[in-house]
Length: 179
Image (cartoon, rainbow, N blue to C red; front, side, top):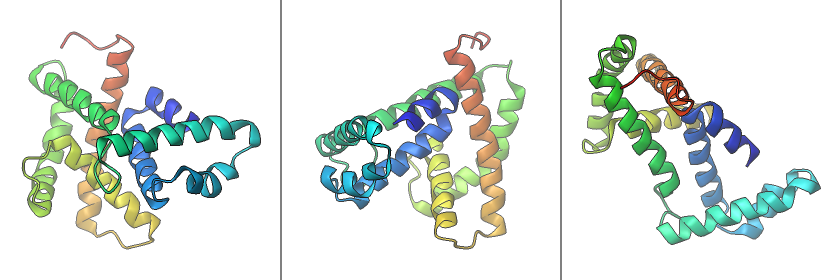
């Protein structure tokens, strides 16, 4: 929980990837708080366990209520994508952020290709980007090979999302020029 709070404040892109991992971790434990406690919470210091149990329990209840126990993402995580999409559109329409536009257009061919490959052409572009990053993270965790083409795509997408996350942080602090 502390990790999530820290990431949400410092890097919204890393926060979203982390929360997707948490969703999958909950699914891997059958959306069962007792299993979460024995497999995850029990590894933490005693003084942190009650808060963690409550946090995971709340997430499990939200996943059940929102019907995402098998797949999909919690509304709180979809809202992050929506907020980033709004900022993305504002940055693209402004003439004050040419480097952002350049990073986006460098990543765009990879985004289009990924959307065609996964058959989700109506999916928001940013969701495609995050799915690509998450997919590569899973490949790395499984110690599976990442092709050069995938590595190039991820490099462009990562740079683009990193810039978007930095602008998001600036916007939250009121440091972003008028959009």
